[in-house]
Amino acid sequence: MANFPIPVSVLTGFLGAGKTTLLNRLLKDPALVDTAVIINEYGEVAIDHLLVEQASDGIIQLSDGCLCCTVRGELVDTLADLVDRLQTGRIARLARVIVETTGLADPAPVLQSIMAHPALVQAFRLDGVITLVDAVNGNATLDAHVEAVKQAAVADRIVLSKVDLAADAADLGTLRRRLRQINPGAELLDAGDAGTGVAALFDCGLYNPATKSADVRRWLGEEAAHDHHGHGHDGHDHGHDHGHRHDERVRTHSLVHDGPVPFSAIEMFLDLLRSTHGERLLRMKGVIELKEDPSRPLVVHGVQKILHPPARLASWPDTQRGTRLVLITLDMPEDYVRRLFAAFTDRPSIDTPDRAALENNPLAIAGR
Image (cartoon, rainbow, N blue to C red):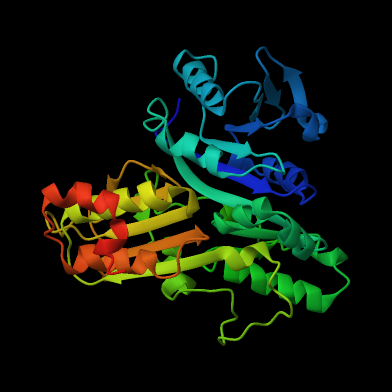
């Protein structure tokens, strides 16, 4: 049995970051009973000590009641197979799914599969992204691999591993600042802390059907209330030679509009943003007050060109209304997002016939 949609958490991080170690520790927690773990390649995950029996089709029964699946085809097929097993009684219960990506993976395709595939959106919801970062090699990895920067940029939780092995305190401090600059909305945790367990890492999403809870400020990240451009919180750059760093290409944009906006304006803004710069949009989250029904906020989140089907909450989770969007982008023009957003929120009654002109020249409406 399951309560649909089933929460899916994505565990990512570069090679050697410690994903397997963290996963093994988490699976021992009774809170993760009836969890399915999907891994890219079985040989990469050392869970032999947890195995009881290997069933057919790559499904492995773990001693704590969890399942492990190996992805030999598409992730979509594996998730769909889990639903089929659940509905036909071959799996008794399924409370959560954890997807572990390979260390070199760009996490965007995984998130897109969960958020937008028509066969999956009714059965699963993206709960959050947990990214492991190696404290010893983290700075060098971020310098050398843009994939590592993307993994940190899309995270809801960033977990520093091997902190006890990091001999250079200054280097560790630089890494912490870099991660906060790359993704100011993510919680930054240490893998070795006793509190970095199931409760801290899961249930990241805005809306949890099991508890009917919502926390907009936590979901959008309080620190993301201002744009971050690779500088410290005092406004100064704390590094030395940053010209080669991939994370200098990452920007966080917080867009705020007081008062309701028409759904058509938000729809066109998001559509144009995705069509013109979708590949540069690493992650987006937002809560919107609609003119058509201000009493029920609209929740949107997306990855690159994929937008999760918008959801409506029954009521506002806090006293603050209006529209709040947080966008994490890679190599997107500095002021394009803000100008485009202002064009639609300041002039929300744009005529639909102008749509073709906007698509041909979106910068014109942005006042460029």
